[in-house]
Image 1 (cartoon, helix red, strand yellow):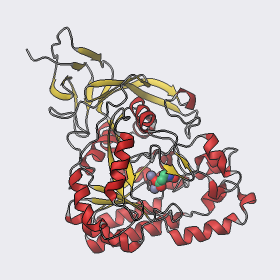
Image 2 (cartoon, rainbow, N blue to C red; image 1 turned 180 degrees about the horizontal axis):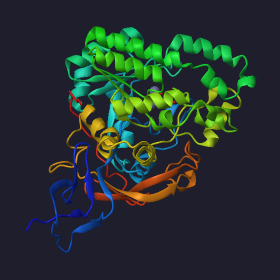
Image 3 (tube, rainbow, N blue to C red; image 1 turned 45 degrees about the vertical axis):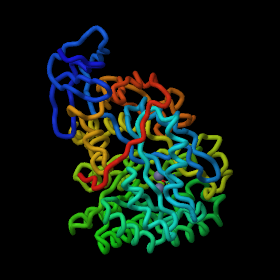
Image 4 (cartoon, protein in one colour; image 1 turned 60 degrees about the vertical axis):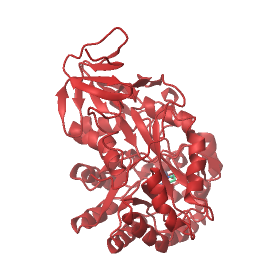
Length: 463
Ligand code: URP
Ligand code: ZN
Ligand code: ZN
């Protein structure tokens, strides 16, 4: 009789393509059997999933843990950020190693791994952010891809942080990554018009308060930058990924580009689907400042349509947590708000509630958006994002009946506020399993610090 370390029993297994009732047997961190009525031995851990859904663990391909940014450091470090992820049903995150100008990409990768490796509680990967195109950068791209980092990020803004990549760099990076099966993710906003508008509205900052953040970043600044990046992808044949897309216009541009065969994919985040810029008018409006900022209700609707119809294929969070104390640094000047929000802990239950429960999104599509598509596009499938014999036993047992109201104080994140405070959730993670180990139960972390591994991802990831 085969022996198992752990069996998930009696649940309804939902993957991106299949729905079935069966048990999952796990041994040494891998799924080794998917069958009805698996027999257990005395040492086997049994997770009873009766009445529950069994999903592949959530994957958030866009987090910034302990990121030095906006004059401070994001408040969820690798330890607590990955604990928060586990509590929210996420079993893999991808963070960023940001090159420093004049240095190599691999310097940044090594430094980031030294921060992350001993502390992560679930598996993680890194994207490499290219901020400089010096004599070694082009030659390094293949080396970085071979190392297990096939996805790069370029910021079309953030001159002051020293992170901005100009169009020439973007063009060359698209050419070079394409040769080796990599892709370029872009933070797409039009820097020159944006910076001009920011200074224009800053002259009246007392009048506008936090709403100045949104006035200075009209939708066309994202649309124009997305269209420009798409043009460079089209010209080079490179593969482009639009990160944290916030506008309906962006979704239209991606749709049109896909129609004409451009190799482009897009991600959006729960905040762009669920919040609109009225939040900036509230007493604590500055807390919601992130780049790009949340937009209008019609953008929410266009992005939902994009998700349902395939223009937008991935949901991630852009988690970049700043506490109320850190956000207070703005002191009435919208230019000084640390930009970013918490998100990884609430992504899966929010998308289930708002997508599946409230909008009738098919369960298989929900799994595709928060798990399988990210695994495929980012070179981890079927090790991650799948429930197959041979896959890592990254499993989310999800209780569709559990009702939870979001309160920051109940969450694992170090953040003392939530953009979704008071939101009512239908369904919540019951048990999160990372490579065969139970790491969270009922939203509380029960795993081990350092359990997470760095994932060496493969090139040529595709949907
Ligand atoms: O405001 C944000 N999104 N902060 C994190 C950095 C980025 O642009 O992704
Ligand atoms: Zn960004
Ligand atoms: Zn980001």
